Amino acid sequence: MKKHPKIVSTQYEIHPLLLDRWSARSFSTKPIHIETLNHLFEAASWAASSMNEQPWRFVFGAKDSELFSLLYSTLAGGNQVWAKEAQVLIAVIANTHFPDGSMNLHAWHDVGAASTYLLLQAAELGILGHQMGGFNREIAESLLKIPNNCNIVSIIALGYRDSHELLPEPFKTREITPRTRKPIHAFVFDSLDKLSL
Image (cartoon, rainbow, N blue to C red; front, side, top):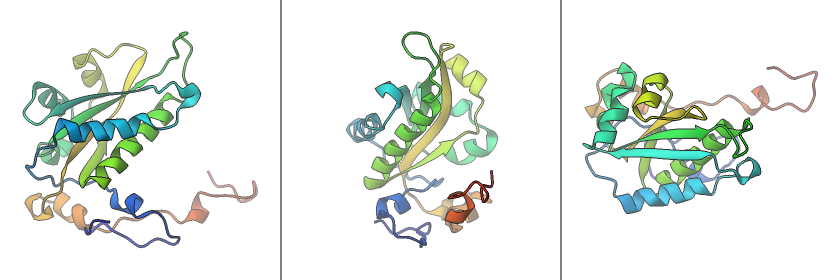
């Protein structure tokens, strides 16, 4: 496990790699090579999916490429402040229909699983990722010419870690603020009488 300020203790022991994944904002200028990226996409491909449909699609742009600039232009202002230093931006896309035209109600869920596999493989290789919902989906889907049977679910920024001191506030403080999670009893129930939604 890599040492960084976001490592936390847990109530129950879990795999160290799960603790090593966090949503960083401070990225170094070290490039991520295509061969390395392919390890991440290979990992994503092994996520479970309904009917083994594998509804995920990834469109990526490396730093200084036309696709990077295009994806960057769709980000919310707060995300643009730090995401400009990422080495790769990835549009995560869900194909929301099966080949027969019926709706795949589990597509976004399955794409989320694939994204998690991608990010865990990234963490194993010392690469940090930050999933963003803060982007203009309508503009992004128009620029990427996404068909009606698909949605852009998120945009992921990837890079190797750099010092949080390089970030402006409030991001500098957020980069070293301890992560928190709800206690298990707040979201796991063994009785309908206790269920809290």
